[in-house]
Length: 111
Image 1 (spheres, rainbow, N blue to C red):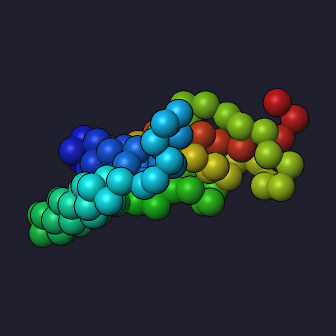
Image 2: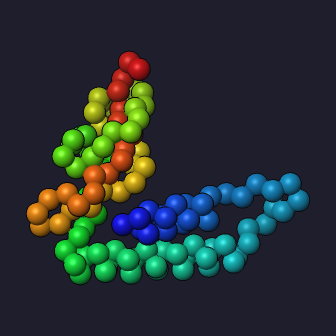
């Protein structure tokens, strides 16, 4: 699960726009690296699924203390209170319940 978190962070970093002073063109190697990381992440998810562990979606859902740990709050007027606006690390469950809670940012209007 930690490997999946690190792969997701690496993919996000590789996909983020690069702003260098003298380098303006995208480097195709970065895209290839991100694609390879995405394949590795997919294989990791497949392995976890093969042992009965699945990722629990959290962003856009109402906060659930059994599946999530609130690590911060945000204030967005366009969303209701207690809706998860960002996932810091993913949550995972198996047939018996949570294996690891998701670490999330929860909306609280009026912060």
